[in-house]
View 1 (tube, rainbow, N blue to C red):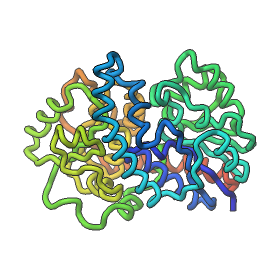
View 2 (view 1 turned 180 degrees about the vertical axis):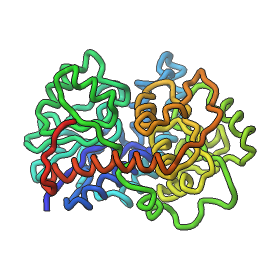
View 3 (view 1 turned 90 degrees about the vertical axis):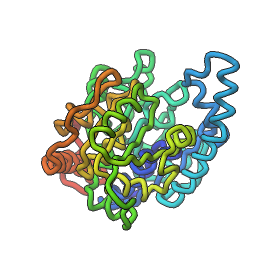
Length: 373
């Protein structure tokens, strides 16, 4: 049985980050590996440092007054989110010992058969820069692979392409989550394949068994999962609400959104998060993983695209022929959020089958070798 260490950004206080890690561990375990999450917890992501780190990318950094206000509000908010999610991580993920830098990661990786980095936006700019650790830079293990790694946007920036090439050319195989990333890597001489987000490796039966057994709530509802400061989100949500005449349940890990929108489900357990998608009548979201769980459970979907880094959302919808469900910030929501859920399930299964073959091949559990497509 091969040992696999997964390097992913599991410590960020976000449901998608946690659940994709859970899904990938379960997939590798099912394929015959002994898998664990490398508990890389950089100082910049610690509970009382996270707000300061995020300020580097915030529009509030432009003046001393704005920076002070941001930190006064967001430091306790982010600390609370991070502390609560840390408990979720220990509960749902098999973690190695904690490490804070590339040397600590190296000590863990040196004892593994395979070092696997992915999924989620690990190759995106984090707090203003790429993190070489998520590219397995300076790691001696010869069995470096990625799985469904994402740049968040369509490609690495022009100034980062040289570094990305030098890091990824040492990989045995590169797997990305978006076709746009595959195109971008091809332009710098890195062959890659496209694989589904780990959440989509599993069908609704798997996620139904993970979710709370009891219904999320009595009665019908529209589930709202807003992760970004998406322009015009609330005005468009009102249009949707008026159209369907259903009560709204709003889920968020963010105290600001909880207070601003009187959210019904604040910092809920991951199992409840999944059950809220399972039991919803309609979903309104600007989140990639919100979109993914909507498709897993075949829910009518209003995909309100965030202003930035929306490529991952549109690539997912396009992969199952549902790009028409997406609306940009300057567009009205679609007239009809319904689709053929059976056909989409079959497409998701087909994509997932190919990704399962890749995972089995890198573990040596399949006769086929890992080949880029």
